[in-house]
Length: 144
Image 1 (cartoon, one colour):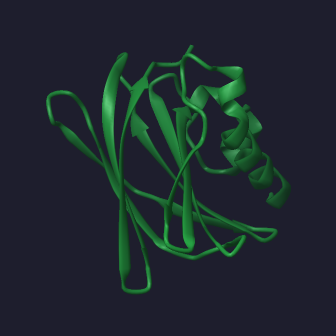
Image 2 (cartoon, helix red, strand yellow):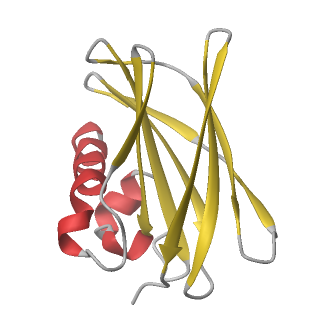
């Protein structure tokens, strides 16, 4: 199981090469000595066994967002919350789940992707008393 989750993380971080038009490469924001890495993609880019091991729904109408928090080169436990909003301002809460294995900690959540459109993501990362907010837009495409 641990090896499959590690593979999921690697797949998440390298998907931009496989689908340059459908997703953007991994992004990052730095807040003092904490760096937050994040990316989002359609769940059909995951192999079925990896999706199953990570308890993710693999569907052309499901997106995945992956977040990791790093401090001094080491993974950091944080409270990650967020929302994704469409152009009509309809908001979906992102229910992040922490995944910990072999020295890695990351947070994954899924959201619906019904049609091609640009969505606005707001991700809040709290470690200790500090809350950092990341806002970004992403053009999303239903998978195949």
